[in-house]
Amino acid sequence: MFIFLIGTIGNTLNVFILSQRSLRQIPCIFFFFASSIASLISIDFGLITRVLSGWAVDPTYTIGWFCKVRTFIVFSSRAMVFWFFVLATIDRWLSSSVQIHHRQLSTLKNARRATAVVILITMIVYGELLYCYDANLIDAPFKCYAKTHACQLLADMTFVCFTTIVPILIMFIFGLLTISNIRQSQRRILQMTSIAINPTISATNHEFQQRSKKNEQHLLLMVFVQVFVLAILTLPQAIQRLYAAFIGSYNSQLQATIDMFVYNFVLLLTYLASATPFYIYTLTGGTLFRKASLEFMQSIYRAIRRRC
Figure 1 (cartoon, rainbow, N blue to C red):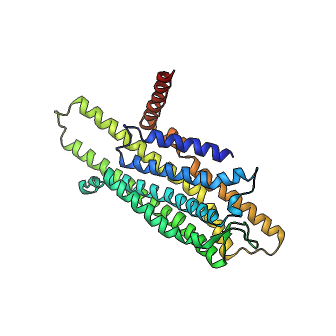
Figure 2: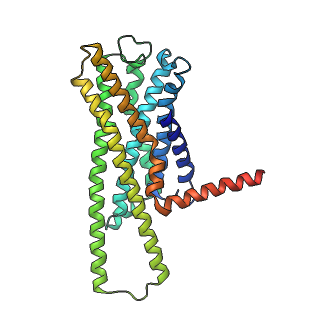
Figure 3: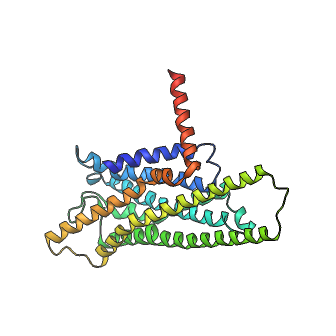
């Protein structure tokens, strides 16, 4: 319930704040915006049935199509969160490049195209869940589960590879490349400064450059911290699914109970990963994110005053 509340509130605030005029033209922010929507969908569809099960029967346990659709939406939206951050990491690499051709690729138009491609590919990859999962199962950990062992193995490997391992590796690689770009840029600036200092550069232009540099640093920090949190909170479930697929077997009721406890715990960690972006952005976004947050709060206050 706690993760459901903080995740829903945080991601809803993210959607409104990141769509502010001062932020929405930045390609990297667009990926944050898309990931917030995907996180909101993942949390609400994933946890709402668990919350409601305390008062009524979980409909995914008894209604076949509801089980299929809910599983498809949760898994695909969770994967989209990862791949949107992959795109954000790639965007940071492009924007920090010393090559102008690379920097020109970091545009809002390309960001929207890449987002559409990720959504399409993710839906295709996880389309098999619409067949593999079903409700009213008896010999399964949950009543809404994969119909066969082959289906479960396919779903687990898709989650481990497509949703977790591959995106994390790509983010790690482009993170290192971004750091390399930053070091190259710093060396280039030092070389240019040592050769000559242009006296025509105005103080206003210098201030603008410093502000842009700070914004870039905050964006980079937001990406890196979020990627780190995603990796820490989701790798345990990937490891658990690998264990369950190749090693784990229910030889006793005690082991089955322990495995189920571990599964539920690491599953909650993945939902926690989807619930944290707003709070991470608030801590690491600097004036870039906080200014947009303040503008959003002020717009709400003005709207309330007009109605009163």
